[in-house]
Amino acid sequence: MLTLGVNIDHIATIRQARRTVEPDPVAAAVLAELAGADGITVHLREDRRHIQYRDVYVLRQTVRTHLNLEMAPTDAMVAIALDIKPNYVTLVPEKREEVTTEGGLDVVGQMQRMTEIVTNLQGAGIPVSLFIDADVAQINAAASTRAKFIELHTGRYADAKDEASREKELTMLARGCEQALAAGLRVNAGHGLTYWNVYPVACLKGMEELNIGHSIISRAVLVGLERAVKEMKQAMRGEM
Ligand SMILES: CC(=O)[C@@H](O)[C@H](O)COP(=O)(O)O
Ligand SMILES: NCC(=O)COP(=O)(O)O
Image (cartoon, rainbow, N blue to C red; front, top):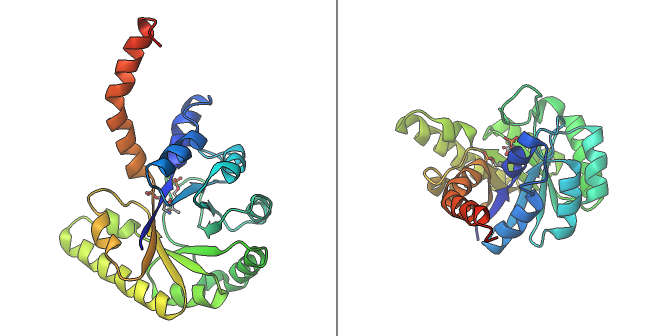
């Protein structure tokens, strides 16, 4: 059955805008789980722009589904993952100046390093997923590292400007999924998925989990606004 990992990075983005304590990603994770999330995903970026070490540390104790830690393939992050022990780690490429993750990992170009990290984390009982584009060579390389999963980068599909390009990207995702499954990999996907573009990806045969964040948090802010304003009026009347 296809599962949903809810990425709560942007709850932390709102908190960090004021460097305060609200909204707390830990509370968001509880609510997401109560609403049916099958997993919680957080990306602990090197620049700590949203999720903080404290969040991952507390989430490890509170998440009741599974915790997917997205992280750059660096020694510092591997040490954190070995200490926290999330249910799985997704290795992602990271650039300081990027607004969000741009491309997939270049596993082909750093086979030895990737294999070392995968071996190290999986040896400690933490399954690893490699966030890659639906590219034949990258998928073969990912399988060679013996990582348990890949996460197919759906950004190009999500950003497609017209139906023909979207169809082309979807076909590449479908072929990538098929190739990966045949190579013994388990397949997740994510990035830029929304309420409007998710269904064709959700229909891909063999897809295990979709990790979705920005669109869900954006919608949550809007569907929750009416209640939040009403509650502030109550508070102003001393009713809270
Ligand atoms: C790896 C991936 O696709 C993203 O979800 C990543 O976590 C994006 O990072 P931001 O949440 O900082 O945009
Ligand atoms: N790995 C993808 C993810 O966790 C969420 O990406 P997005 O929905 O915030 O673009």
